Image (cartoon, rainbow over all chains, first blue to last red; front, side, top):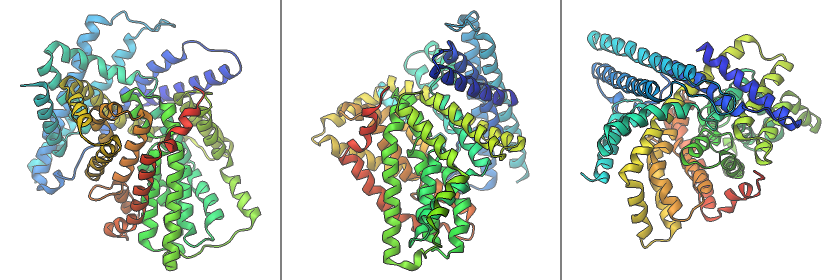
Length: 145
Length: 434
């Protein structure tokens, strides 16, 4: 998470500096593509962090009417589906990375994409880990109720 | 099965999964992936799911969101929201209902920092509720004006709703921001007029607050003048074409940090807290956006939007009447759905219809966001109302919903104005330099 936050602050400083510099007449090249890569680090870690703090939007109005045991079982099932979906995103991302994008680099600065694509995959693995913990916790709750 | 039937099954499955508690982003990604697999091929679905999430993350336009969120969290953590409220309170508080009017004014200014309605409502609620309680304001009016005033966070730029709409539809975020500004100001004016009428009708609803001298009023800017200047710089810079919305977000966040440090209000703990909150909300937004993009491709392949657009275009009704019907649909959807989810789920269907009817994408974006604002305060799922209920536990939720009713009437009036006089929305975008 700290790395993602650090990249956000870094991006903020970089963009601000580029705007000030541009207004002063000196255009810094490559900020656009650098920022696009930096935000990947922020978003990848933010995804897992939001899952950890249960910030992903869920509609609860129907589920809240069920008995608590059913709610816990449903949560386990929905966490499993979430885990499977994010795992699929990671798997398809890895598949395409290994087939197409190993030597990809940004246009102007030639920054290699590979480290950022790997961080993106790491972020997805973290999301999956959070949902795995959620499944275990929800199943325990269902058993105890 | 025809693509349209597959699309309808997909939509039903999606709503069922969401009702059972699946996160919205996950639901859209899963149904979108399954639908693409069935309608095109396994290979195409894998390629889309493999490419889209990274592309969504590595998107310059979307970087606007975390940067503006960071700006708002810094301003909030450093307590500038109280100063903004104090300015409005000193200028308006002596009127009948003046403290409620000040709350709306403060909310409008805070909305120009915050991208979220909920954050605007809660932030202003924490500051303004104790004040209105102190001056014996009617609980329905005080909580109602905060819940309704908070919705301006969605309309007045920077707005998460307008940014996501812009990204999904490929509409200029800068022009959307410009389009939301005048409607946002009109909203604040309509709410203030509503309070004025209510308190003329029944003065006990909002007693007068203390009167301040002109010097005290002017001095009230001393606490937050630079933040007001920052807002003007950020929004003005976008409209004048000095910088893009993403750059404006970076300048806003940097400026907020510099001013807070200058005022000695920012310490490491507050900085860390603002970053943590930004990361949480950023993760939530990217989660839902990744799903929305996959789902958008699926919807396009089902041809549902085009079939619907053709059908609606063939109806013997004028475009304005059709738009009115779309707004009614949004009114019902808003009552049961989260604002962002509503925008992302319906854009693939309603956006092509609006465009085929000849409406401007900027105008439709503002109308759509306006309807989500109404959804935030209509029962049963008026998120802002529940948020205010969380910080005013002594006021029953039904009282807050009752307090919101006059503001809902004001909302219907202003939506009718945007509908009948599109220039209200389109004037600023039309004079933009970029």
